[in-house]
Each structure stands twice: as structure tokens, then as C-alpha cells.
Image (cartoon, rainbow, N blue to C red; front, side, top):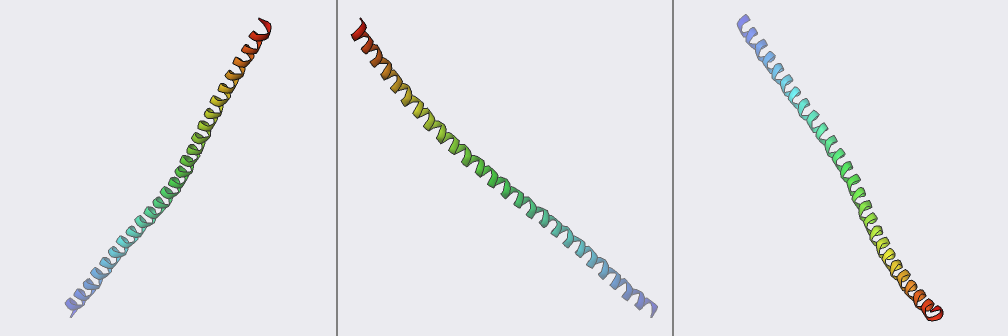
Length: 94
């Protein structure tokens, strides 16, 4: 009878150890899932910030191009007025 009782206790002991091992594996899995989820959230936030930055750079590039065009147009206008001024001076003072 004591032998059967020992086998029964060993069975429950092994069952409890297996259950604890399964619980530990489950905990480790959930722990990894939690960190993976946090990493995904951070990656998403960084991607949003990068998109904002890229959008800002595109806007800045557009403004720079428009400023270059305006400067070029102003330089042409200035050159035209300089030529007119020289022509006017040469007609009246030479």
C-alpha cells in the first residue's frame, strides 16, 4: 500500500512540476510578447517622426526651389534695369 501511495505522490509531484514548467514557459512567452509589442509601438512612433521629418524636408526643399526661382527672376529684372539705365545714360550724357 505504501508503494502505491508513493507512486501516487510521485505522479502528482511530476504533474505539479510539469504544470509549473508550463506556467513558466507561458510567462516567458507573454514577457517576450509584451516586449515585442512595446518595440513595435516604438518603431511606429519613430516611423511617424521620420515621416514628419521627411515631410518637413520636402516642404523646405520646395520653399528653397521657389526662393531660387524668385532670386533668378529678380536678378534678371535687375540686369534689365541696369541695361536700361546704361542705355539712358549713354543717350543723354554721351
